[in-house]
Length: 338
Ligand SMILES: Nc1ncnc2c1ncn2[C@@H]1O[C@H](COP(=O)(O)OP(=O)(O)OP(=O)(O)O)[C@@H](O)[C@H]1O
Ligand code: SF4
Ligand SMILES: [Mg+2]
Image (cartoon, rainbow, N blue to C red; front, side, top):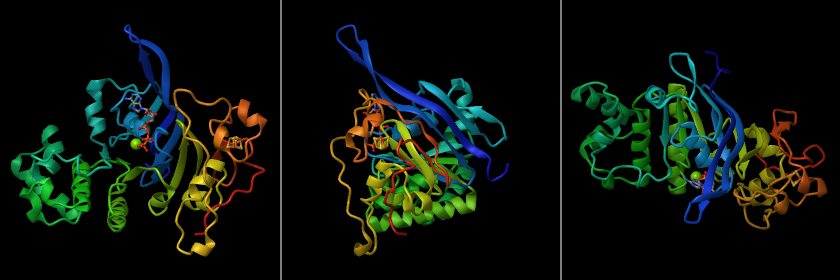
């Protein structure tokens, strides 16, 4: 496997949730939570998925782990045996060995750990469930995992309530690593933590990536968090990807007006270098009633008549960017100084 071989390759992913009304629970419409999303992640790469609340980030993550059944599309995952499998269509019985190799880190380290289980049981549970090792070898593995996430082994017999948010997130990471996964889906892993602790967890994730060759799908609602973790960034708006580029490029030279607006909210160290914040008018569009044309047009300061009627496709915009905007070539958008 070369560095460029995608560990994960998502194509045309859709997840429509039916909206049911009346006594007969008739389907009267659909929430198009994820609507034709495609991307890939290479071995050792971090792709960040960014966008406002409700744009479909968590639903995309849950589809990848088959926690929800996708409505359409393929999710090709390169399993450790070197055999690509389509997670979207794999029979349930064949999912378990694949699921071991894709793990999730959750946003809320307070509610994602069972308060009645010891740290040893929490971290060792994936091993137990998959019938791996005896009690002694599992405890040995838990001890190693505590070393990996830089927590004292002496914590093994304690319960989650004894720990801070950052320590709990380390426990969550240790648990995710128990089965040696290739891909970790981290859904807002630091959003619930204090800013000082966020940096520690992000540094730990970077170190683990280097050491273990992990690939990350890193979900965040704002761009400032993703700057230091991602190799590439994909920006989502109402169920669709509107821009993808490598991190440096997307920060310096965004090509989509929505990315520009998200970037204008990113704090910069020198306030004099700060471009004025773009305040987006109106609410995020409703995924059960997506505006015609470009879904962003009701909020876009650059919208024209064409934007109101014709949907822009995600296309190659040069310089490594993919962008879905009719005006991408003519607009000079503002990024943020590095
Ligand atoms: N089980 C469900 N049934 C119906 N609608 C759902 C379901 N799960 C999610 N949705 C809807 O799908 C859309 C996308 O939700 P999702 O949770 O994926 O967004 P998100 O980008 O993760 O948002 P946030 O930043 O708030 O976590 C939302 O409109 C949400 O209400
Ligand atoms: S297609 Fe039009 S409305 Fe959509 S982002 Fe581009 S300029 Fe704005
Ligand atoms: Mg979410």
